Image (cartoon, rainbow, N blue to C red; front, side, top):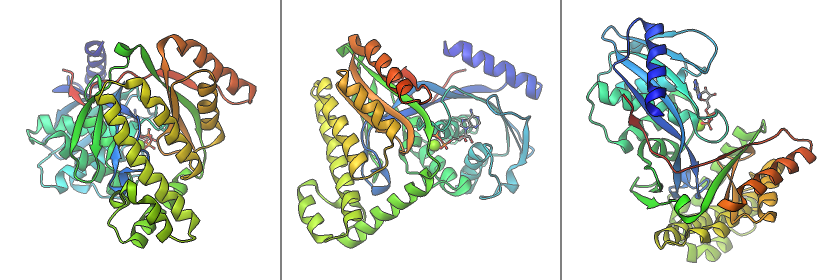
Length: 387
Ligand code: ADP
Ligand code: MG
């Protein structure tokens, strides 16, 4: 499978650039199992990699040119000069790979140019992190080709910097770390403060369970502004409580913290979500580590209620997926990602998948909504070289 993909991408590269690539790499999209809006609060997250990947065929250049092409975007090859790369100069998709080259060079790594052809099966803008897949696949390719010797977490940091500074999106470290570091059959327990990580066994098939991703295909327009507001509100909460980040508010000190926040209801809600969500991640880790996989369902559902009622970033479409799935016997369900659209995840017994999927589709049809895309998410490998 991956050999055929690598071959096809290499072939297209040769058509575009006149010779075959030096290599082909892949980096996955991700789903966050639990730990939502905790990453910019220095908290815990727990993503796993999807089988969907961004694939890059890449060769080095020594003349300072960076040539970029994507199979998934209209238009030809974009040509840039690595010496001219500067934050804020590019508003298009090329900012992601160019930002990675910029971040590597900024960090003192000698990258003298590249020819890059990309093709991705990670749906863009569905909350499954197509952007980090793109960044990480380029970073890994250049790391290998230029012999930079950087580890996965270091590549993730550079990719985050590319997205924060070069693209101008204030994202946390989760997506890039997931794309770089996940392992098949595992979820990645990541402490976003010190980047320490642990691979947690998450082999659903062996337990007779499935995890479905339901992409609602909606994206409500105000989502970016709302993300900024939530971030600012969390920072305000930390400042009022005198801690560096909400991560520092212990779960058993939550009630006292909420009392100290007085009648600032908005901030109280945000703080309650973040502190309880960190605790939910820890609960899921300990359930999975003791082989009680099915019992994580209610914890996921609790997480959804917290995102809906306290963090207030769900939307009718996401709630419809969760409510319908639970009514049809799902073990647990929650929205995932930034909110206001994008995807939800549903944990179900294998035997229930068909009925569940049908029920969700029918509920959307009844509500006059666009049919959601439903697919199974098998915990898959992180970034790797294919050829
Ligand atoms: P998400 O990461 O949740 O999918 P983002 O808004 O962070 O959503 O990133 C989506 C952007 O990433 C797209 O608008 C596009 O610029 C870029 N992108 C994703 N996949 C590709 C691709 N295959 N080719 C070119 N650009 C892509
Ligand atoms: Mg993204």
